[in-house]
Amino acid sequence: MIPLLAFIAYLIHLYEYIVIAAVVLSWLIGFNVINGHNPFVRSLSQFIAAVTEPFLRPIRRMLPDLGGIDVSPIILLLACLFLRSVVIDGWIVPLFR
Image 1: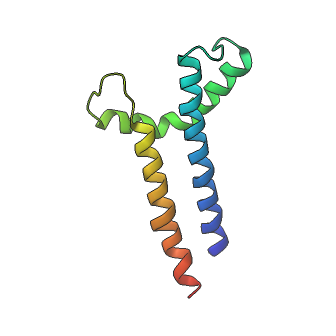
Image 2: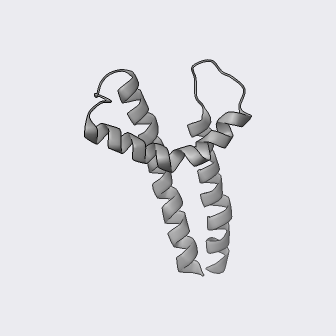
């Protein structure tokens, strides 16, 4: 049970990095630092969007319109942090006491 929870915690931590990469990639494409028409950048962007959008879309639907500011990745990162620290670590740490 403990290795499974540790693996799930690792996957959640990896997903946090993917969400951060999605934010940075959208900024780089938005400010024309990298070319969004480049095949590698396009495929990377499509992969990251396919992985993050299923979780970001419901959050965006619940949030009010804030103009051009998208705070849904921050909420998703906070949810991942909550899930990893409270739920997963809450099960692993008491088992070692």
